[in-house]
Image 1: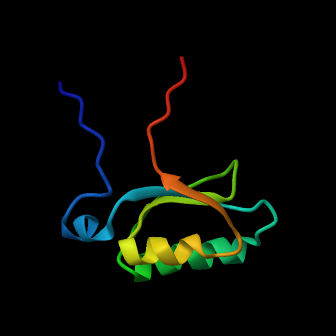
Image 2: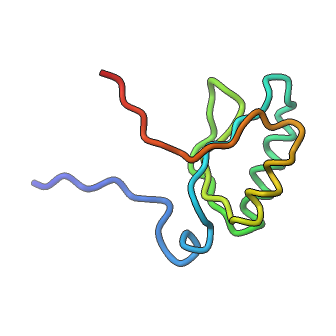
Length: 89
């Protein structure tokens, strides 16, 4: 019996075009509709959404370089940073 490796969602030609993986966090008072629209815009620009956060308003995604620059100017975004693996000890 062998354990099956988890499937990656960021593989294939589209992921290579989608750019770096980022965490996008919105201000706490941002309406959910604004976040949903942003996620749809990421997909339309060729990006990939990997996870929508529950404890904070935001998501992790591969963002095309041009769209990353556009998001940085969004007035409802608190911050955007490269997505990193977090560990607790």
